[in-house]
Amino acid sequence: MPRAKRAAVGQLGLLPTSIKAMVEVAEDHELVRLARLLDWVELERVAAAIRKGKVKGPGGRIPHLRVMLGAMAFMALRKRTYRETEDQLRHYVPARYLCDLMDTGWTPDFTTLQDFAELMGEEGMASLNEAIVKAAVAKGFEDPSRAVADMTAQEAAIPHPTEVGLMGAFARGVGKAVAGLGRAGAKLKVKVTKVLVRVKMLMRRHRLFAKTSAERDVVTRELLAQSEQLIGQIAKGMPALSETEASLAGQQSKAWERIKQLQETMGALVPQIRHWLTTGKVAAGKIINLKLPELYAIVRGKSGKKVEFGLKWGIVRLKNGFVLGVPAMTLENESDQYFAMAAVRHLKALFGKAPVAYGYDRGGWSKQNVIDAKQMGVRDVGIAPKGRARWAVSAAKREVLVRERAQVEGSIGTLKSSCYGFNKPNVRSTEMMAAAGYRALFGFNLRKFARAAVAP
Image 1 (cartoon, rainbow, N blue to C red):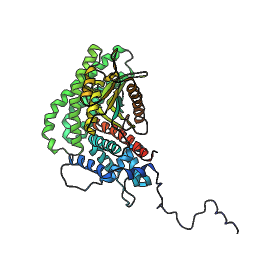
Image 2: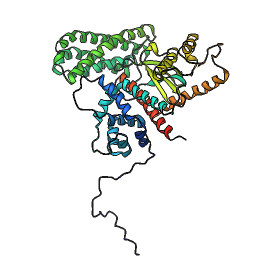
Image 3: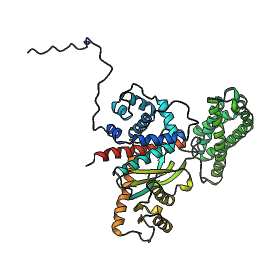
């Protein structure tokens, strides 16, 4: 039988190529397994409860909770932006299967995805992560009777905080916010323009011409005086703007809220800068970013990275590797001794009883913590003692808990990898930074869930 002649290079076919693809998803694909394993009814119940507590009323369109939850799961597993997720849900078949979009041509756009993520927030992502861990326990994938914990830092995507940089950011923020007020802020704009020009000139002098520490100190002090003057001018102009606050809408309303936030944050920061100029020491609770004032400096003592800027997190690893976490939103609850007991209370509240065995490093040790843990129901308290104090468990149980305690570092390292995006999330608020941390935990546990289902 003669062979068919090969078509000439560049020759077009008789019929145009179809833009509709007939694609079959592999049965063992990770996203397919998750779509079939997860209890979507329970996840929808969790999301609906969060939404009910935040929306104003029952009006509006019925949300596509099943689709949006699948999208959040995909973002957690693959570390995608909202625009990238929209593109993947539109063209990537396993992602459409995960989101139950195989029988429809509709795809949520990136603004819908962002609105839903902000609606869920920190509380919603924490609840979804806890629901996955509970499901793993119910299916026998996880055993909460043994747990170990540690603390780590979640770095923020912010510039290195300096006094000059913070004052310059304050002036730039005020300039943009006043411009966003439009006609409503015309009088305030006239008052602050001269100061803003002066600050800009001082910033340039500090960056280019102040060569010695004495010259930089003089410029910093003058910048502080200009910042205080700017705060005073804003304070004088705020009563007039408050009278027209009801008429502000859209971008004007956002600009007005930004001015108030900057005024409040800089009012607390000025004494801290003055304390540093006077004593040469950083004030306690120093504000490190004007947009995210809740963040703080975390002294780590690492080689090459002595200080990290962001939030401190407590991470709990259960026996088979599923993880839970909670951010320390204030300096009062960011110590190891506090979290060592907070983790036990959290596990007891989540599963109805405390773990039988619990381990922590020596940072969480105190005689009172050992007593409190036993009173909460922990039989084997494996908190590493300080000094010459003795372990509260036998040598055999100590070996087990120390070995599992070391595995927490591996879980934390995986969370901080480029796969999940725990570190330096691209967010604009502290709440969404915490939500990004919970989303990384959510993705980590989802992948663990999918693998546990096919493990021998």
